[in-house]
Image (spheres, rainbow, N blue to C red):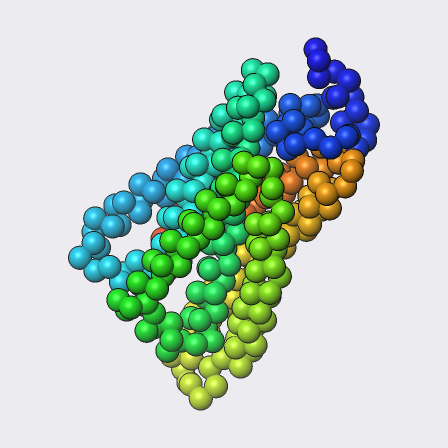
Length: 294
């Protein structure tokens, strides 16, 4: 019952400075976050487990050829591992919200921030990979070899380190440093990759004829659609991240604005897994089975 006055204030307008965890135990923020938790646990968790299971099967078939694993698939597998940590954070947060345990809420929401940073970095790396595939195909083919795989593994390791660093900052309620880094990288690298791919696509196939030209165009178009999908979810994340930062640095912050950010981040949870399933042919199989039933 102690949260009644705080809950009403949260609904009506800005509150005195509160931590993110304190916001989550007030209404309507607790309801918003509960919806988000339900989506994470009942929709995304089975998808993440399926992708890891499928990836394990593919690894057993192709482990003799390490270059068979594309960079995009590698990024997706690592992202899904991070997403599992985020789901665990959601479950811990849920227990804290409805068990009046502010420490559990803080622990769970902080753990989820680890996933949020990983999403941003792996989305950007996916854009860079497709940029190289379209604009610098020779360099991209070289990066598919042993040396390139080593570079990729180092970069993936750096993403994990940065995400853990963001987690450490989040423990102290200092989200702005790592959030700003993600925002800067999003607003510089992703648009550059997108515009470069569009430019390459408009002049694709010059000097080529027939079937070969068609294959090149289709390959570049797939890369373009991937980058556009990632760009859209990153822009959505960016818009709410900026709103979240401006909201939290004010003397009076609105808990609803702080909490609604997680709902606008939901598309970013799905984009790489869905693109992975499309590359693996699983979405096509599902569509065909649906059409057959119809």
